[in-house]
Image (cartoon, rainbow, N blue to C red):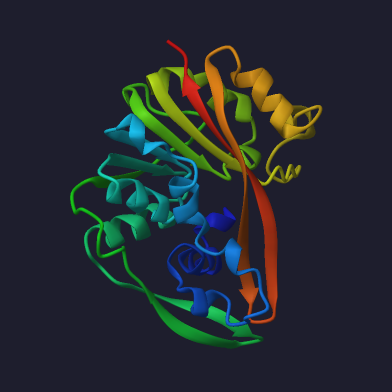
Length: 242
């Protein structure tokens, strides 16, 4: 079974995307700067001075980055491989509140509720399920494409990279983050970068894109009240040539 279709992963991502700082990390000694990752992949990487109007959010999960793009005035299409994630994001976009459980310890859990941000302009966000390596042919081109922590979860990331130039208008932005966690359970070793992920991205994207920003973005995933995954994603912004 696809782990991204399980209730456990859905609950974990709803907390990751919509949990308040206190709900995620009650410890004042913890890495507070790693909270709010789904918003920060937009606010810290996107260049809104370029006045983008349309965006594609690939690997959108349960949609928080899509809503952040819409909050900045863009019409957004979010795509994810998990149908349960897409159903959750669509429900949130329609104004529903989603109940979910936060694991605390052992069998103990806390009931929480996820809601889309109040400032989200309704009607500017839509969601659909899809495979980032086999996107439908009629998607068109966007002013901005956002793909957070997606590349190292694809069986063949170069299939998506090869499609990116046709998805982004000349002068448009590509926002990528990746923790560079290459695992054979997701990506066969033959499809891993041979050197550093950053050098691989420069090689793969350099012909069609210009690197405009590189920034480290820490993030925090809660497993339970006393165990967390702290990671630092490689964040980059690229501009489509032409």
